[in-house]
Structure formats: C-alpha cells, structure tokens
Length: 335
Image: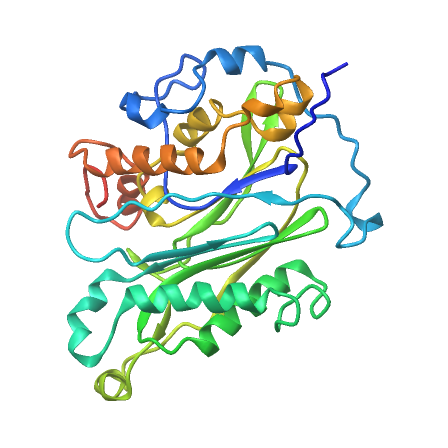
C-alpha cells in the first residue's frame, strides 16, 4: 500500500487569484515562459499519475455533520501589481472560506469625491471574512445551507463597508464536504478534480454581465456623487449574485480569480498548468506527502501565465471570443 506520512497535511488544496499554462502534446496548449512553471513539476508527473485517482471513501454529504468532515482548505494567493497605479484587487483565505474582490479601476476619476476602489475592495473582503467567523452573521450555526452562508457574507460586506468605490466579488465557503459560492460580476471560481488522465473542471461560475464588458458589481458612492447620477443609475446589490453548491473530495483544487484570469486564459491552459501540480492527498496516496505543491506556487503560476497572455498583442484569448459574440473585433490580451 502507499507509504504513510508522519507529516500532518490538510486534505484539500485551494487558492485565489488570477491565471495559467504551456505546451503539451496531451492538451495541445501554446507555450508560456519557463518562469510560469518554476516550482511546479514537469509533464512526467502527468505520466506517472496517469490512471491514478483518489479512492471514493467519503460518505455521502447528507450523512455528514457540517463540522465533522475533516476537510479543510490549504490556501494561498498571488497578487500582481500594476505597472502604474494602485492594485485594486483584494482577497481573504482561510481553512474553510475564500474570497476575492476586484475593485473597478476607472473609479479613480472620482477620487476627488473620496472614491477609492482599492480601499472598498479591501473592506468587502474584511467584512465578508468576519461574517463567517463564529458569532458572525453567516457563521455555520446561523445559516445551514452553505451557498446561503456565502450570500450572507457578501451581504454583510456590502452593508458594513465604509469606503466608497465599486468592485466585483466572489465568496466561497466550505461546509462538511460541500462548497457554497456566491458570485457577483466577472470574477469567479473553478472546482477541479484529478481524473484518470489529468485534472478536469467539475464546476465553475459563468460571468455576470449587463452588456459587453459591463459586469455586475457592488457600488458605494458618496452622496454628492450619487446625486449626479441618481436618475439614471441602477446599482447592483449582493442579493443579485449567482449561487452555486457542489460536493468536494480530498485532493480537489479550488480556484478563485478575477477577470484577469478569466479573460486571458483558456480552460485547457489552466488544466495544463494544474496537471503539473501534486495535491496533498495524491502525495499521500503515492507516498510523497512532503512533495505536495504549495498553493501559493499554483496561484503564482496562473497569475504569471495570465499576465503573459495579457501583454501579447496577437493572442486569441477568451476575451476576444467573448467580444465577438457582442459584435466587437478584438485581438490580443486584455490588460
């Protein structure tokens, strides 16, 4: 049987942020710079793990208590700063919840009114995280349906933020062997699982758009600025978010990301990168628990891959295909 480890490892792997990929004869994916794969394994890992899957030993979700599953998130993140201006992205990451917020950069034109999208995104993440703690408004004992806990955390963030700005937002909660996700806008999540011949996307969130490149977003404006647009402005609310629920297993990979990843990396590119990753549960299974890939390295690889695509003036990224559906002809990565 597999070698037992003396190292205690979390049984689920996750992280936040932005993006991915490289060339593979299996996935037929274009190449990325070698820097994208620093700290990951080469394609031999996929060959060695071919037909290796984790045993389905977990009891069904309905028979589990919410706190007794033993699953927790091993989380990490990577944020890429802008070449110019402030980075408006914010996140939180814990053993049972994740969140990401993408502040709207163009709100800088209203800075003279006191608008600060970076501060607003940061506050949204702070209050969402606090709401999920014991005693918070969306703690486990308060709202049993896991997706409604995620929604309640988003509502709490919306209601308690003091800064002015606008931001998309995604909140994910792990409860027992289920995740619940609330998503507003063009950030989102992906749930990936090791199948016999590599990683596969089990669940993901579509983007929420009012029109081309006009995502849903939370907005809080100072009264003086709000009065300028009150007659024509219709603001999105946390309750407008989409809700998702999915069963999870040991070894699953959860990604939370902003539009920087969604708009610049195709699904096959993401899969190629995560096929170079060794999850803790798989490491235990094959007797290599100490060689599991830290989640912050996965996040870094995806972020660098997305950045590389965004700077390529000839890349046919997902945003190009998305724009074509709205009648716009675009070419190159989305910055």
